Image (cartoon, rainbow, N blue to C red):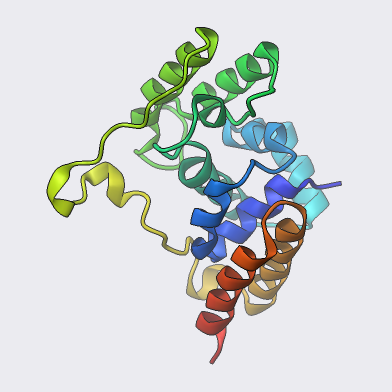
Length: 202
């Protein structure tokens, strides 16, 4: 059975307004499977597409890449979160996540030139976790100007027009409700879904 993490990734692909809410909450169950997709583990991708009855591989991988970038590797995250884990995750689990993240961030992997820039951040997070220290987020530049890295966090829908049908859009919005019921506080989710509904209205 597909776990909340994949539904969260699919929902975020069409409802980018959920990103700030998702970043404030614990990561959903099933991050291991999501990281396998991020690392392009073929057997996991095929199995997940079959379970979700999806026929668009690129849509799945793009949604997962987007979730990893916007929610897991956000610069304000704690080191264990940048490794797709929790404060109680074992060293072995985080090491496994580290390997999958670095595989997915390898320059030879497809999915965007942004990936190579994140490998040092993941390695730094692993060092912090290994040494038992916290990670202090980098200071934002003064003056209100956005750096190129900050611009990557502006919420934008991944798919528009013909890339996603209205039926799938509605289905994934409902999936976002399911994820919210399991992971997110209802009031914050309600506000985010209201924004989604407003944008989807004709």
